[in-house]
Length: 193
Image 1 (tube, helix red, strand yellow):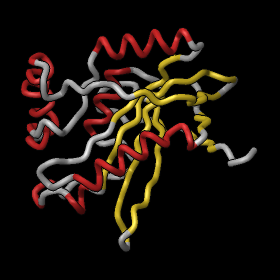
Image 2 (tube, helix red, strand yellow; image 1 turned 90 degrees about the horizontal axis):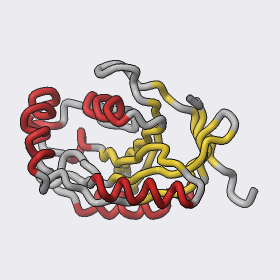
Image 3 (cartoon, one colour; image 1 turned 60 degrees about the vertical axis):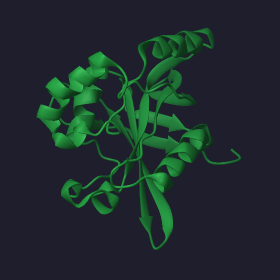
Image 4 (cartoon, one colour; image 1 turned 180 degrees about the vertical axis):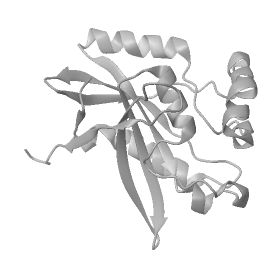
């Protein structure tokens, strides 16, 4: 699998906009969430991200998903995942539709991108122990391993001195559950080139 991701930041404009809106409106009880599917191509030794597609989240509405969180996720990763706003589960029919539309355009589903806020600063006091960044959390590693997608991106937002700042990470899935994710090199297109 490629170790490099080619990205024009304008491709992520809608995702950035939604992430900032989620961040600005969150509360310690209602964490922000933003997740999308990354579409693109394999080119030489890299993955080129060309589109972002949003899909419906059934994390709080599907009985099977609720059961999975209750029986597996919460025991493995903690009671914080009892909050229905924690986590994302893509509606399968939408994922199939997006996959077919991508194939019709000559693209592939490369993976996903999601938001990490500076929850260690803005979350409830009892959840501030895990420092969050653009690095995968234990839950992320579990999900990345399960999806098997070659590209898993994390947008990290934090407020400093009254302004929002971001960093972006790209990761290959771990080889097995609990293992570390392999970082991927991000190559950002120079504007106007």
